[in-house]
Image (cartoon, rainbow, N blue to C red; front, side):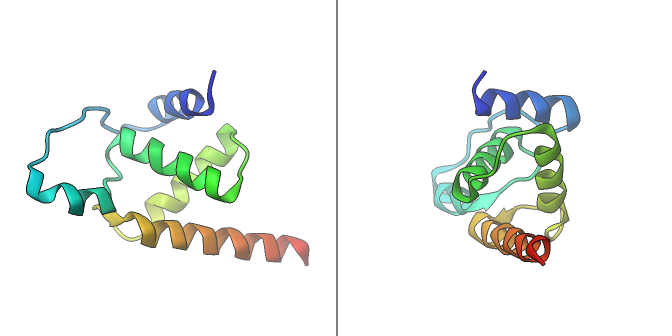
Length: 102
């Protein structure tokens, strides 16, 4: 099973995310591509995969749970800017690594 398949399976078993893709009007496409809908399973999976690749994080259920908590704790349950969330997660990870090295 690929990492994407493992993450998808974990998200389906542990969340109530929607896995339906909706058609968006063309005018909002560029705006929506910059935003993350944290209720959408496909967007969450793709974002988490991108985060794990960028930070070279190992895939595991424990890491998925920690990542999901951090993502959901950032702001409210509404759409958030992907880049702002990614920067936040990377900063948190750096702080955690510094604290672990002490």
